[in-house]
Image 1 (cartoon, rainbow, N blue to C red):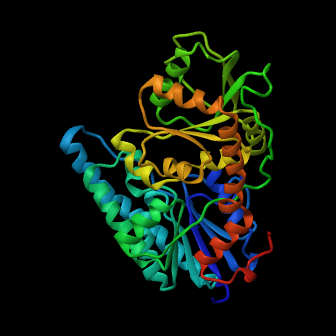
Image 2: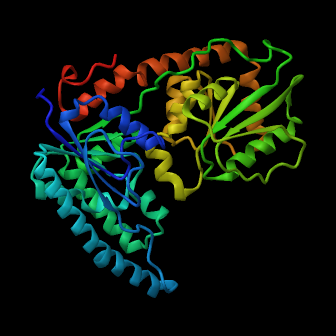
Image 3: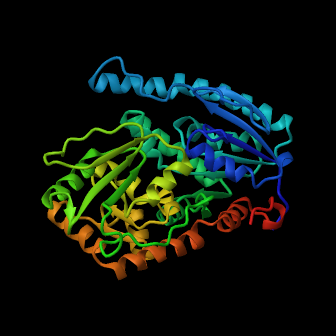
Amino acid sequence: MADIKKILLVTMTPPGDRNVGEIILRDLCAQLPRNKLVVFTVAPNPPMEELVWDSEFAFAPDEKAWRIFPGRVGSLLSHLHHRFIFRRIISSIVDKIVHFGKTHGAEAIWITLNSVTLISFGAELARRLNIPQLGLIWDPPDYLARRCGLDRLSRKLLQKYFSEAMRISDRVAVVSEGMVEEYSQRYGCNCVVLRHALYNATLKSDGLTPGNRKNNPLRIGFAGTLYDMGQFNMLLEALNLCGWKIGDRPIFIRMIGNWFRFNGMSFPCNIELMGWRSTDETSHLLSECDLNFLPIPFSEEWQDLAVLCFPTKLSTYLASGRPVFVYGPDYASSTKFCKQTGIGITCSSQNPGQILKVVSSFLCDQERYHQAQSNVFQVREDYFSVCVMKRQFARFLGVDESVLNKSC
């Protein structure tokens, strides 16, 4: 493998510590010698803090659909706005990035293809700078387009830009095996699974099953954002069936996050609302739970997300050292990963009684529970250690691990 080239990172999420994306990039960038990286951020707002690398910033255009009329006329006008006015803004941003890259002697591009804006100019930037490009993907493009409310023609155009950016990239870092299979077949690109390492993961080895700590309640943990409340309400219905008790132990749900709305509380229940917490606090609070809940939407609208993505929640849950309950379709990448590695339990039934059966039988089986917990620790080592992340990052860059900063 070659020595490391000077890299131009183009991203909507600058390396930092305010959210998951910033933290992931921060930890990846820390693997590089400082003089081998420059950063160009294209975002709605400038970075809150000055970056340690040479950097530049450009305001991203509004990615949301421009609609002043409903129906087909509104869709057509929205597409024309996206195709011409949005594109004109994009061209001016590319001019700035090209100038910045040439000024700093960039030898390779590393672009996060995780926004409508960056996907729209990914291939153009590579052609204009005429240097190797590396892509990083967290979410599928159609999901990003739907989230912005883009019309059908604009979504089709975005898919075209995405295809061009993928085909022109030397390598592409993705978050799941599902993405590797899909994108390598569709675009013929060289994909590398690159997941965030679990730093300072809480280590817990004691079991919390009903045969142990009999006076304590059973806790089911959840952290993050609920995109589909229907699945959480289904869990509530399941717990209503058993009166929020398994055996003699009451069941509590511990919720960590900013905003939740509950519709399925038709029975006296026990919910601990912990609000927003830091990464370390979240890991600690989840480590006090018996089982952590990972809902994956069943609806067709979310199918590409379920199949291709690897939720950061799962990494967070594994950091706590507790087994995971993946509730979602069998085709979801998280469901397949849980079954493959034995880190917990899965359920694809939308029957509350079946959900309760799956959860209660697992929590009442000490041998099965402890085996899943043991698997969690093994999976953290095999898939989420700093050494694994460094090795995969080196593969993504096409360099030898020895040229990266020491971290394991």
